[in-house]
Length: 114
Length: 115
Image (cartoon, rainbow over all chains, first blue to last red; front, side, top):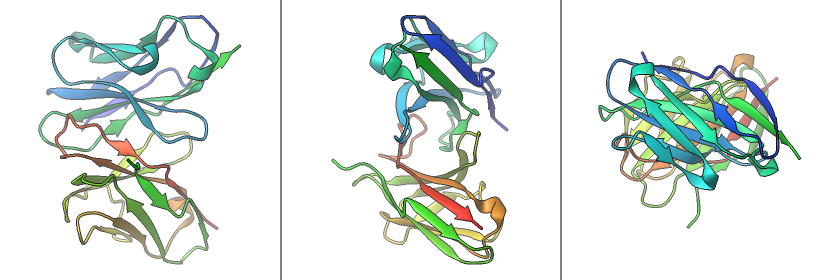
């Protein structure tokens, strides 16, 4: 069975600091990888996804993530965070076998202080 | 166009009662998913529909949970004999074709509280 680990449960940063949120998955086959974000009072929305090609994926709002197959990792990065990035971030994976369900990590709460 | 909508936004019920939660997917999306999110956890898969049929219901916790999508659009998640442990946010998502690389678009969720 697939599983996703997000080791940072809470992160507090000052504006302009750099961000890296860890995500590791457990699955032996080919996977598709996703980062979703949930801003306060809003629903989950997609930040970026990877399914093939360049392992460095760029998403919305200046976020990027790098797929490192040998480490089973898909870490999310942003060079300079803003107060508006305060949100909960979820990493998710599904198997690239036509099997649709997403398996989510437990999420990381990011608080950016102005 | 409109996103995924879910009704009600909040539902409070008593232990043992029956509840129905509704999901309206994005128009034209053939795939529909239900997830459940407990406090401090990520969403957990319940069931996936491709058109009218349940293609994967492996996440339903027990036979008190049932979902339908009779016309391939709106879906209803039904919970019988609710228990306090059923309290959670129930999320619905839809995607265009259901292939694994598709983006799933989530609704705002229904917060279910079982007293």
